[in-house]
Picture 1 (tube, rainbow, N blue to C red):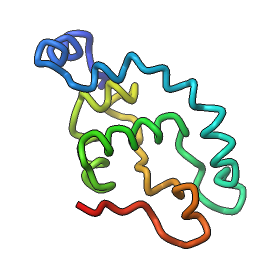
Picture 2 (cartoon, rainbow, N blue to C red):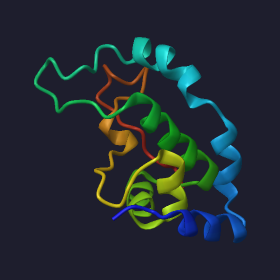
Picture 3 (cartoon, rainbow, N blue to C red):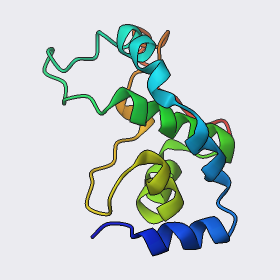
Length: 116
């Protein structure tokens, strides 16, 4: 089951705050994200990586909404406006930023944690 055009319009009519982010061409960041995260290619037995641009968008959602990793994962699955920004359907699998090692923290064993 996918989000319909009427669902999207209803969100717009309600004042979807994420709509402004849809104007950002996140694909411009793909090359830099790929280069920065090249060591996370799944070749070392890790699970296959999620799309880098989608994970970057999730980080933006987290930062603009003060969300922990767990809360972001829940809301992405729950909120159609987040799904629309990420171009996900209701049946799509959702990753979360803790599925990526934050650059500069790869060797320390630490993961991104909210301080809120």
